[in-house]
Image (tube, rainbow, N blue to C red; front, side, top):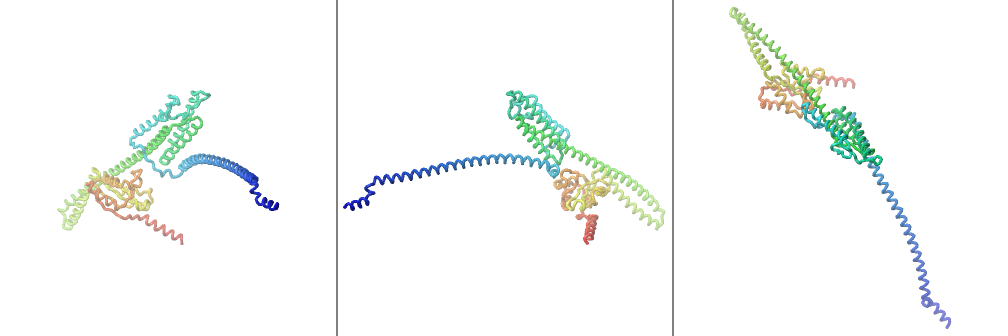
Length: 460
């Protein structure tokens, strides 16, 4: 029985000792919970440490990025300044003469240019003079050449600070004005753009020094005045050159007219002398007819007929000379020089000389390698008007668009022929129009043939 009871106690001991079992299991569970909490806290501390580490790393990286961006901005500005300086250096020796400058003034009288420059210089002087009239903190960049960014105190003295800043503005102006004056003295058609850019660069560099040292700067309005001045000086010098060339053209035209007049006067005297000589010979031949025999009479009558023909020709020549002396009759010539200028270029000119080919021969002198070919020598009752009309019609086709004294055009002989027929009716002038389409260019063609022969000889 006791054994049975012992067996039952062993079998049901967990149930009988439930409190003890629960207590034991609770203790074990609590121990596991505490262990897990320790692990969780340790992991949390590790995560917090990693978070702080990464937060610091992000902040450090953001700081580095900000510094890199600032360095990049500074480097970009420095690169831009270096590129500007490089461009200015290259402008000295490269193709600045290919640039185009659009004139801002269209004066055609010297007094207008002088007044314009005087007005600009007066504005410049006024903007400088205000420095001696107003206190620096009253300056406006629209009226004064230099202004303050901020008033600086010297030993807590505002007046001394402004006095020092005013002196700084004057130093900046002396430097800037000195450079501008040098640029104005050197400006020409090759470097006008580069000189304007030099003023801009000088202005920026001087202002940078003024702001960093004493918080003062030059006025952009003053800078624009100096740019306006250099443009006006450049255009004035160009105008003087054009006026000089125009005066030379007028003098050449006067000399040409004088040569034509002398030729006409000489031709008139020679024609009158020839007419008198023919008239005397004709009168003599007529007086001898009455007493001549048949054989002599036949010879005299033939001589009389020849003299009468000459007299008629001389009368015609005298009328032409008289008309040329009293009117604008002359010749408009169309010539080319394939060897010198190619086959796409023609010269349209005018001469009132009695022998117009003399003028063409002068043009083909030692200044060009080959003589000119004549496509047309148009005799007309008003040569200047016809020439001007042709020049006006083909004005946009000029080879030299800057100097209208150069009478070369990119035009074909067919286009000139068509326009001549139109102008003849429009201008209501007499004109004998006969054109040669192809240029002979004899010397050039022979030279090319000889050159090719020599090249083949060298190769062989």
